[in-house]
Image 1 (cartoon, rainbow, N blue to C red):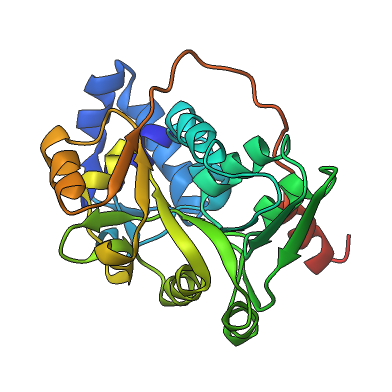
Image 2 (cartoon, helix red, strand yellow):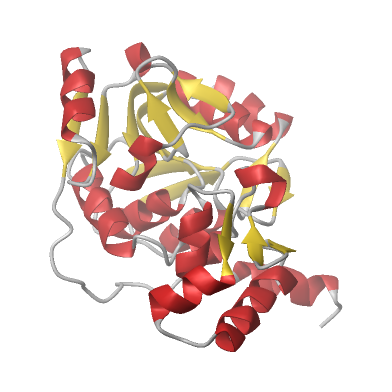
Length: 273
């Protein structure tokens, strides 16, 4: 099911027969898994398969995205953490790569972390020596993020040393891009509040575009990615004056902290449990 979601990040649809052949399983098994994804509201069923919601512009829930490209994201997070000095103020958005960066920052001291991500804040909540400032706003359950005017008002009065922002895609013409207008707005405010802005995105994002841009190339101090990034595009970004750090994922490692299922807690509260 995770592979189906990955395929729909770059394609309009996938078909039962194709998936059955790829995974060497029966079409009955494939249909069952696709039905599960459809019930979760992550895909739309069509004749012979499934398609992405809103013609490829849908967002996959945070908890599922957290399990995609894990080793790449963790390697990027380690390289990003190496750029953070103790005593600094750092901004993290609500991206899954920012969550893994938050786990790496737990070892730092005397940090102030500003974030609109609830799971990012949770990952740092009990870390000694780290002060977490959560922007206010309206809860977006699919991203476990806070968006809206309350968050942007806070950021406009804040000065931050470094910001680390995830993205759906990037290009030299438009910079970093994402889908949701509310998320894009708060990412823009974060970028404006930071002295140095870094994009944190795995190699799969280099082949993608998205609806809205939030950080132009000339505003970026660097991009942190993995060896999956196209070499010719990496060199073009470097020629444009942007530092591009590629980091090797290495062998899988156990997570230092398990994500807390805030979404389940929210739903339990809504149900009166």
